[in-house]
Amino acid sequence: MAKIGIFDSGVGGLSVFREIRKVLPEEEYIYYSDSANCPYGEKPVEFIIDRCRKITEFLLENGAEIIVVACNTATAAAIKTLREEYPIRFIGMEPAIKPAAQMTRTGVVGVLATAGTLKSDKYLRHKEKYASDIRIAEHVGEGFVELVENGKTSGPEAESTVQRSLEPLLAAGADTIVLGCTHYPFLIDTIRKAAQGRDITIIDPAPAIAKHLVEVMDEEGIAYGPDSGKSFHISLHSSGNQELLESIFGKL
Ligand code: DGL
Image (cartoon, rainbow, N blue to C red; front, side, top):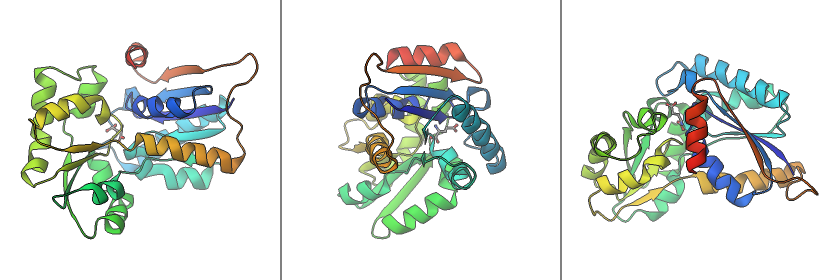
């Protein structure tokens, strides 16, 4: 059984944990939600790096053997620094532009992400590498993180908020939508509803991240799987609203 640390600016990383647990059901998890500082989307890069260092230290003190940065914004801002400063493997989020570019039939891929992710060098390089033959339409999921942090993933408010950011992507002809923020998968049903019967494919990168985590654990020789007498366990930590974290976890 391995001890896996996972963190996000808030509860969004639970959408990644949900996929990780499918492939690694027996492990011990420590999840840290930085809800007191959420959203990260518009915060300065230095602030995000500093929070990521503190959270990494907390996870290491609690015995994490590998850390999943289950936040696209934190990955874009801080993963390079974390990899330089700590002697542990970090798994980061990648917006799923590569599979989306292969799947689109209209030649237009829509990306929903935070402002921090969309303007990051990491994202721009990724786009240059995988999207040279297609068009990318981008939009910040304005208000999406706040909806999820408040547990409002459906209903009229969620629908109108989602509609506002999705509409420009649909108007640009996008038939494939990449969810570039780990909070957004919790809104997937509302996103589908807002697409109003249009035939769109929505890509959540979390299953690919879970698969990559297993590959890296194999590479590092981190043992996983059932141990005698021990089975799945998760400890949930929040710098803000602990009850919300537990309630969203409870709904998974
Ligand atoms: N869940 C995060 C992401 O994947 C960040 C949302 C935010 O804090 O703005 O980008």
